[in-house]
Image (cartoon, rainbow, N blue to C red):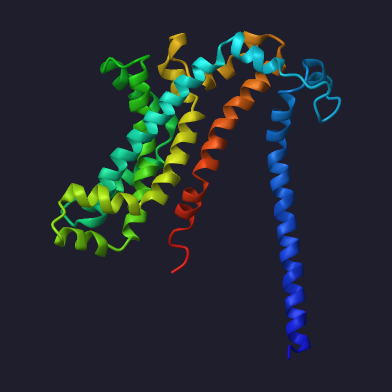
Length: 283
């Protein structure tokens, strides 16, 4: 039989959980309200947005999306940004993975110094990197070029990616790798056929973070890009006022399209990302 004390404790626990989840639900609702408002406003008329009459679109219109594609050709700049974010993420993952594995598995002189050097790069402010990055990119002849932006973004995302991947590899037991080497597998065979599948959750996690960071990046794009055809979507959104005039519906429609890309990416990789974030939480 269950005594009254146990029942009381369970009731208190249920009430506590209800209060906690209710509070978290309210916080989540407040945090999502601006995003939902922007998405709904993309289907409103400019008059309804300026007057603030009603939360829901009335009348419902898609003219803002038409303006975003026809007036400033938003899709072209989204393709540029997708190129920067996709290749920049791949570059950061490849370089960080190849650096994290030997620094996590092998002991050699200077290893701790390299780890500290790569990790301390996270503490550097982006504004402080503006001048050296500008002169290095210009000296290499990569100023105002797409390949230059890909290289810069790969380098900017390398420190965080390296730290996360190395921590994940340190928490992964090396027995499978040792067994593969005993069976005759070479270094790169073990790396790509054993280690890489094991680190898939961590790779998905840092890939989403790096992609979103590059997708939303404005500072270095504004610093290193001049040509109209090389601009990313954030620069275009910043110039919506001059491009659209008073077409606020087109502006929020463009912002909605830009927000949907990282949201869709997270939904696609959601299971892997959650696995990567919770790895090591339970022993």
